[in-house]
Amino acid sequence: MSLVQYVVVRGDLNWPVGALIAQGCHSCVSAIVSNLSDEKTREYINALDSMHKVVLKAENAEQLSELSKVLTENEIPFYCWTEQPENIKTCLATVPREKSVLSKYFKQFKLFQ
Image (cartoon, rainbow, N blue to C red; front, side, top):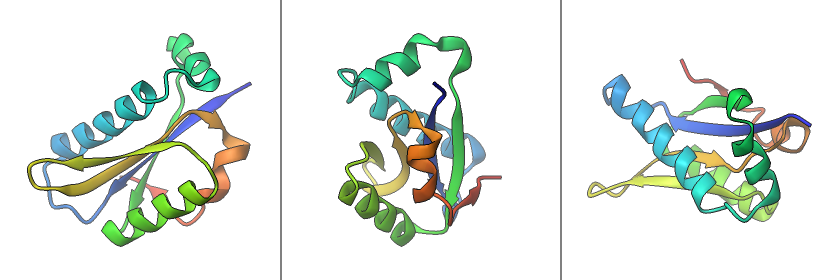
């Protein structure tokens, strides 16, 4: 069974590339650590050589917020990273799930480039 973790980074932030990558890392680690009791999360981290992520771009904070609502309504666990002390929501990462379970929630997003 192939698991995937979706990561959505805001594309409207005029931050250095390294800072944006850090936001993605923060949200991924937070999603994993806050869901260590989840069976699929444990399966994902036990396969260190085959972790699969899809990194997408949200156009703005509103699009990230709307995605958060949709995932919550559909009981998809995720972590939305808020950069402090600025209090800016920058990135969201799901817990690992089958692509067939998650992909429908991310069709409107493009790859982050």
